Amino acid sequence: MIGISKLYCGTVEPGDVLRYGAESKRLPSRLLQFAADKKPVVVWNCTRRCNLRCVHCYSRSRDRAYEGELSTAEAEAMLEDLARFGVPVVLFSGGEPLLRPDVLPLVRRARALGMRAVISTNGTLIAPEAADRLRAAELSYVGISLDGLGEANDRFRGVPGAFQRALEGIRNCRRAGIKVGLRFTITRRNASEVGGIFDLVRRENIPRVCFYHLVYAGRGSALMSDDLDHQAARRLVDLIIDRTAELHREGRPVEVLTVDNHADGPYLYLRMLREGSPRAADVLKLLQMNRGNSSGAGLGCVSWDGSVHPDQFWRHVSLGSVRERPFSEIWTDLAHPLLAKLKDKRPHLKGRCAACRFLDVCGGNFRARAEAATGDPWAPDPACYLTDEEIAPAAGKPGAS
Image (cartoon, rainbow, N blue to C red):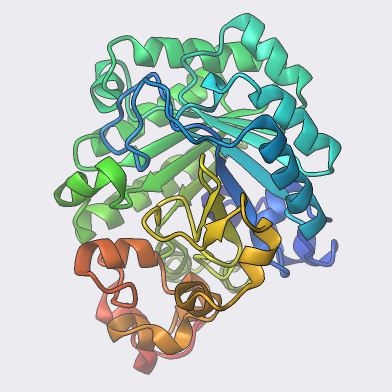
């Protein structure tokens, strides 16, 4: 994650992170991406079932029962192991997690074990009573997916009326006092909706919005040609930066992040250098603390059947199963060659990634996307839109103008 508001608008400084010792268990959630120990945030796809049919769904979910999902007892054992291991956050995802009958008791169990618990949902099932139950479960955050306004979202999500029901879910979370934010996945077919999403954030007083770059996985594999070209990506990131700054000038400190393309970090830094920002050097320090993509290190995934993956997009790679071994053992066992290489990517990266002066900032970007596009997980990420001149070592070390 690249905290556009944190970095560009100065709501976080390097000293804020260092004050806590940069340990994930001690850091408040707003600073977690800068943790030094990188204990993994774990995405748990607690069910595959979903009531929508999203065109980019990495789990290829449908509205039907799936066999083999972890039982309540198995899930509780997994959560206990995650807590002992020091996992700071469990993200309950799906499918649609609210379709799992025991999801809220499991959220409460995660909280009782000392972990933060967040839910990623399509929001369509959050009636007022459901919002009250979410509040009672002590969720840290509810992320609701919207991929456009009105019919644009409904086309993306595959079900008429999904937008209005999600909007009602957002409002119900706000009424119940739950921190809620938006999740928006960017493609050519909905990039023009980004400005409208910012308008919605302003109008509904939504405190957080995350813009996700497309990853070619699941049904999203068919959207590879719908990804933005490099110039369009640069323009859109500039728009996100501009609209974020506009909100902050208005006295609306909305948290805005971009996700799944760590080229956004160097791009933001280079823009701040061009603008002569006195904060550019501090932003570079924060980006170096963030360290870019952390799939297989600071981010992991457990599937509905207990399979462990380097992240939620690398579903064809199983590192093991929590039904057979605890997550903590699987995650620290470097016998799996991919996991071992993801812990230290530098020697394995190829092409422009290997020589990039921002490698320590972006972490080699998204390896699952590189593999999907080229067949080679160590090839350059095709979604990196930085020019050869911008990344060239000859241009100087990071920090040079």
